[in-house]
Amino acid sequence: MARMDLSTVESAELAAQSGAPDALFELGMMYCTGRDVEPDLISAHKWFNLAALRGNKAALDYRKELADEMAQFDVAEAQRLAREWISAH
Image 1 (cartoon, helix red, strand yellow):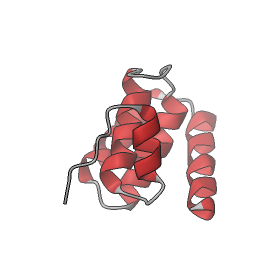
Image 2 (cartoon, rainbow, N blue to C red; image 1 turned 30 degrees about the vertical axis):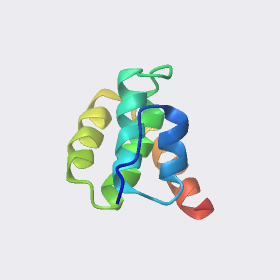
Image 3 (tube, one colour; image 1 turned 180 degrees about the vertical axis):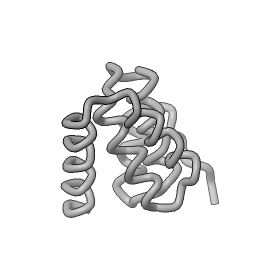
Image 4 (cartoon, one colour; image 1 turned 90 degrees about the vertical axis):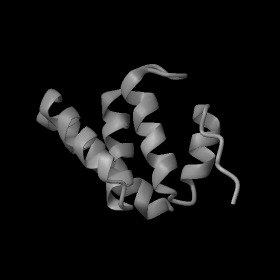
């Protein structure tokens, strides 16, 4: 199986549509670091949360680290967005 090219947000989002843990994690990294997108901790938390739910162990640590830096209402918003994504996919 060929390795997915997750070097851009568009390709990572396309791969994430299938729920691929690596693509979900990569989106979290992109939003967390501001690579190819504006930094957005709420989005990063959402993607790390989804990746963790799909078995990506590293996403658990990143999600916790972000949550420690975020306001409680921002974490709640990220969790709401993750639930919406799950419902849509």
